Image (cartoon, rainbow, N blue to C red):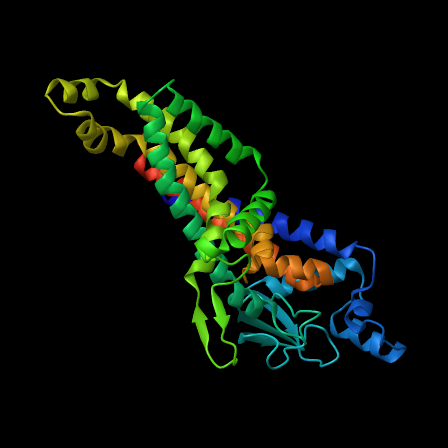
Length: 358
């Protein structure tokens, strides 16, 4: 068990290292000077040189890459010289000094994702901390909607196999898998938030927290969660329907189900007390993986509905070429994706005796 977890952790570190490397190379070779982007049209030679030195843009790409790894690493080396990029400036790093030798300090710190180019030097970690919880709430709501409705429709599809009910549900499932999320978001926002607003009282756009007209209080608007959660849950809903249908049909052909029916149990009791529990195993496993995907898939859904989550922040950062925010957000999403998938692998291997976790 311990070696299995250790192998998974090594795999996670190597995967995350690969993601960081690709992200750095991708956004470093982009055309344009980040320093000029930060100064916009107001730059002069002195300001440009100062910005390039402050962020290490005046160094070769290989040195910039080492700087970036040093910033992200929880164990890092920093210079005592104020002119050096790695200088342990107050407020820049949340660090604890461990060792000191010559002009270098070895520290233990939280990963430093740098500062936003466009938000007056606001730390990327703070931006992510403010927006990620909203994305998490949205993903949980979408998974909940997909799980409840997918299981119900999957059971109905299995019980009425090859009937018009089964075929109708299969059509819905196929459409859910084929229609892009951004198109569904536009359609739902227009139809339920605009055309039927009088009846639904739902808004086309809106986030979880809204400030009142006087700017004095913040209120939670749960109704703004409904449309983006439904749209984000459409694709996993389609997957759950298919998995639930196929799994339940397989379970219903088992000997213990025939025994339960022979004892005089009605169909409802057979499904709820005997078949449903075993049929849910592949569904739960699939949804665990889908949850990680939703953190990345919420990008366009959040932007269209005006949901102030990490996805919307990424789109805004792309529009303004705020590279630290883009890079930091992608790394955080990749980290969570890897972490959740490893957790699912370990739990699934623990629960299923056919899978070795030695």
